[in-house]
Amino acid sequence: MNVRTSDALGFGDHAADGGAEGAGAATSGANAKQAVLFERVSARLKAQVGPDVYASWFARLKLHSLSKSVVRLTVPTTFLKSWINNRYLDLITSLFQAEDPEILKVEILVRTATRSARPAMAEEQAAAAPAPAAQPAPRRQPVQQAGQVAAAAVQAQRPAQPTAASPLFGSPLDPRYTFDTFIEGASNRVALAAARTIAEAGASAVRFNPLFVHSTVGLGKTHLLQAIANAAVQSPRAPRVVYLTAEYFMWRFATAIRDNDALTLKDSLRHIDLLIIDDMQFLQGKMIQHEFCHLLNMLLDSAKQVVVAADRAPWELESLDPRVRSRLQGGVAIEMEAPDYDMRLDMLVSRLNQARQEDPGLDIPMEILSHVARHVTASGRELEGAFNQLVFRRSFEPNLSIERVDELLSHLVGSGEPKRVRIEDIQRIVARHYNVSRQELVSNRRTRVIVKPRQIAMYLSKTLTPRSFPEIGRRFGGRDHTTVLHAVRKIEEMISEDSKLSHEIELLKRLINE
Ligand SMILES: Nc1ncnc2c1ncn2[C@@H]1O[C@H](COP(=O)(O)OP(=O)(O)OP(=O)(O)O)[C@@H](O)[C@H]1O
Image 1 (cartoon, rainbow, N blue to C red):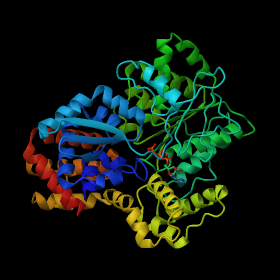
Image 2 (image 1 turned 90 degrees about the vertical axis):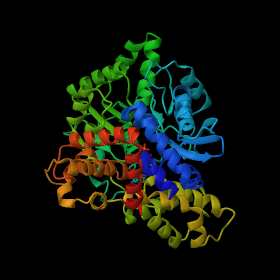
Image 3 (image 1 turned 135 degrees about the horizontal axis):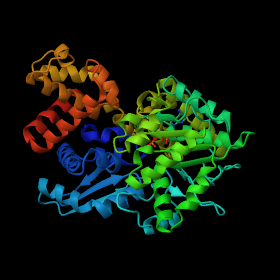
């Protein structure tokens, strides 16, 4: 219940993040009162900093614990921790104090990460680099290689080892992220086919350019992007490949500008065949976006392939410069959805086979794998977390029973639930609450008595489901995505000013999540 409550605030999109022992376990320790307090503070924070900044920096913030006077919050990366600490800690503290004057201190912790920590040196480098206002240092570790400037930032569950053939600018890709280990299913088939086509095309661009892959967290975007890079660099045509996260791109440009070295950097990027950019939602800052727009235009105009991934569709990347957004929309956008049961089971079996290569004696009964696949439903990352827990526990509890597995994974089992909220349920519950019919909610009628419940239902659809603005628009009588966006913003504003409405919405969330 408490996990769900804090997810319902807009953290839900990222509920999967943080790994096996991260926020899920932590959040389950917080009681309902704490969760409501956290919701209220986050709503105020969102109202204060605006939805774009909020989505970039606070979407993955979770409540860890709240003692009488100390609030502990968690984020998935060290970078986010220092970014929030440096810029927003005072604001967050004052928002908590406004809700509860007994609170004296707010601490930001890094969740037990399933991703590798940044190597100390890179960490120091990032911390030392004075990112220009509004431009962050990289979230993941940059790695430089012999005289090369741009490098990829890599995410992995253990420190990534460079593959035999590395991308042009020395991207140390995680060798496990290949097409062979990527499980195919109905939810990602199209994206996988497009990715394979690009990897096989080598230096010659394919028809869809740029390819834009989007999904909520933990559904395999990074795995797929790195699989493209891993396969492309080994193809006989030997294209020049660069894989990097948007944050690394920002950091690299910020440092190059500081060191008067931007020209060299730009020059080194001119000659690539395949640019792969991950986590596009983090690209911020006018100047950096301008540089990125240049690069994008140059590559696309010279028929070089670009692949981009983000946690939302290109038209929903509101913080992006309209020119960048428009260029990104000029190709093909493909959404990946959550894996079904068969895919989840295949992922677990595949992970077991990989783990057996290191430990041939490792065995987890099929009955347990299938039980986990049935109950841990949210994302690949949660499955990975569940698998790691099982392997870890098995070493000192060799005969795990199903009941014990349930106990160990209860935080992961619960966290998938909010994602199953359906838009129809939201419409039904909101309509009943405001005494209007569901048909009226999706109709063209614009009387006040209908407009407000409709906007609330749209807001709840955006915050309680992973559906995109256009899809929500379609489900509300074929409305344009900007209408939904307007509704979400309006209700967010109203919530921050009107505590009665805020309580009403909390009540609706509870009814929907019941
Ligand atoms: N289809 C899949 N086949 C195999 N593994 C998968 C698949 N989807 C996700 N995973 C695994 O789940 C974990 C999380 O995936 P990944 O990091 O690629 O997600 P993501 O969509 O990039 O998440 P984020 O938005 O947080 O960056 C990884 O260990 C990945 O290997």
